[in-house]
Image 1 (cartoon, rainbow, N blue to C red):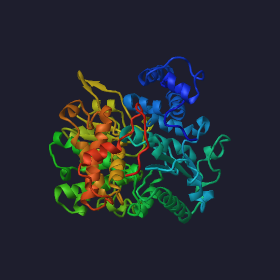
Image 2 (image 1 turned 30 degrees about the vertical axis):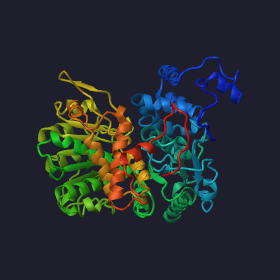
Image 3 (image 1 turned 135 degrees about the horizontal axis):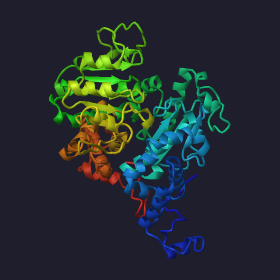
Image 4 (image 1 turned 180 degrees about the vertical axis):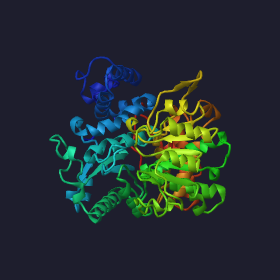
Length: 545
């Protein structure tokens, strides 16, 4: 399972070194530079007809020649990110049992409850800094994929290495397999996961299993190992986050990472709006799951801080629509759980999003519903009628779940929308202008949040640290970016973006006494030192900060 740092099968090995390690003759005679090898891989990748085939090839490369895999990602991030992560990773997870060929992480079944530490000890690496773990309960917008969700932790940690420079040996993808209620998987003879119903596990047993895993990680790797929740079902995600966020260095990227990324996009749009202050905006959410609630909570918090108003007042600027209509107090159709109640205002019931827009007249519309094309021409026209520059985020992914396309957002608002999407879209030409709307991808924030927390050895990841990440991201958006319709900086500069965010997060941890190590004299140097992984030079494994 363990992949060596420098692959003995790489054509980059000099002849002398091949002789020393005994592989002369086991490799072709050619000695190629990393760039030549990557160019050869790119030629083959571009010849493949489907994104899934590209994903499979790249993951085989990940296992067989790790340094070349990361050389490929780091130097071709724009091309490769949609292949190793959204949107292709969604399709890969749906087919995971068919394409599975190497573990690449740990699968811990709930049938092993009480023995999680033993299983964790089977992982060969002795020093792990970052873990991404899922139960597969809600993979992207695709629902319960259970053990097939392993593609998500693998993809996220590939981006931690690529964007934050954490050494590949120091990351660990994990699936906590509690079964599945997905009938298609249960009836699939190829399914690789635990064949029992998810609903068989009580909430108490489930929470205890997650708690046992977190404790086992701390016991083996230390309290300052980053543990990132990923793609848990809404109620589980919010409950577990509330239960464990103050006890461990952990965060939920779907809830908090998405919130920080979305807040950053809104902050970067403010200079172009008539009302240029966050607390002056009126925001409507289409969708009220874990992502929507997490974004709403963070925006309300940021409104309160920036506008010097109380949290209750800030929340009154935020409305949400779910499958039963506008979320209001005492809604006859019900469906109000404890997570939605803080945004259930006193108002008459409203059944559909179109009427909500007419009544509320939002300046910002955020889609997190996984309802494809729900932002139709009528919705988009109305947003343009009520706003000179409507802010429209269609955040659901993969692409098949997006509330609207970039083309529709631009066309039906007469080119005035400030648009971002959870999945990538091609640039749009409208009225002889090119709009290069940017993907609102969590990769902008989660590597920097995690790296900043690691540098500070933070005892927890606070809301203030997350808001610092959002502001640091927004600060890197230039007028040139905004002029072509992008609310985020260019992804090609992702390592510098990550470094800036990590510094802001670590600085907030030190300022708020959440850091457990002395503050370095030069925080920038400490962050750059932590971002040490470079696949083109000989590597040594760093000690944990």
